[in-house]
Length: 424
Image 1 (spheres, rainbow, N blue to C red):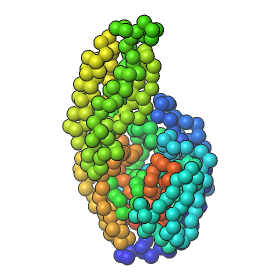
Image 2: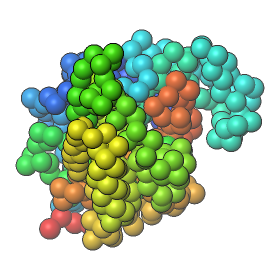
Image 3: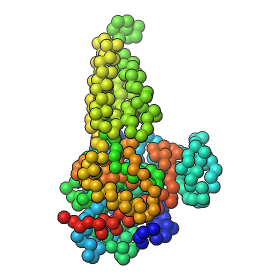
Image 4: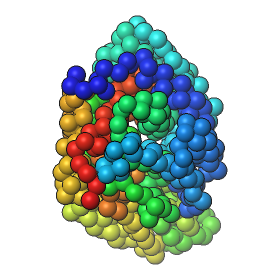
């Protein structure tokens, strides 16, 4: 270890992070991508208010809870560090709607023995098929009970950020510059920070804690589009349908099977993008298909958008008299280019990881974070691991040792920013 942060007792950090995490995951914050309002669900206010009150009780003098459920808190610089640049740390309040997020019952396992973990619903956490789980033998983990997701995405990030802030407040000998904490609603909906109070953000750089295993650092993500495909048919009694009926439900099914299976999420990894059907529904007259387009290269995302237009024309040709309308909406952009313009943001992150002897890997995010949108808005925001695994599922779990290191990395980043640069 090359600095005093590396010598911080892991047990002391765990005591700051883990009880918080166990408390946060019990607060239901499932978001709803079909609701345009921000936040999309009232439950997110429960966690937002809890965090705002907790931050005030820790001694934060500046805590704001906006009209749209953004929590923003500021930690003033240590004496003599007022000229250091303000930096921020960001995590999101909501959990995805793909798996149940209410009545979460986290299971804390001390000194994991390496056996299969049987969950409700016949689900199993198996170290033989999950090398990351096998690597936790002798360590502590937290997993779901199988009836819900766990919520490490992204309540682990929240707990690690606030844990780091509490440590700094309790150890004034660790000098630091201005620090901003930001907790956001509706990240899982892909909205991209609607109604975000950018004008009030002081940070010149941010870091999201919204990643997976220890050492994963991410500075590039997908270009993301949401696509709504509408199918309009013609209705008549099935007994009189010959030559007249245009079945919109069948049109939607025909469109869906045109999507290349080789370009689906389950068939791709690394830098390969995909089409991802999310919801298909309808009847004889009206049907719809909701899907996502993801790719690291904008030209490849645009290729897929053009392909969807050709699929639409093909379906119309198969179903004379029916119409297909394709509407696309940009959700967020690859953050790589904007972060490359500010190389010090990544270099300080890499240095912090090295100082803590973290064997880091730069990986692409096969998804996006609120940091993607914040980067697009002018504040470069790489993503940091949180220790969670199997996100968005009933088999979600988290490694406590990874969570501890994520918290330490936040503290070390704050320390390095206070000595590496001065504010303009």
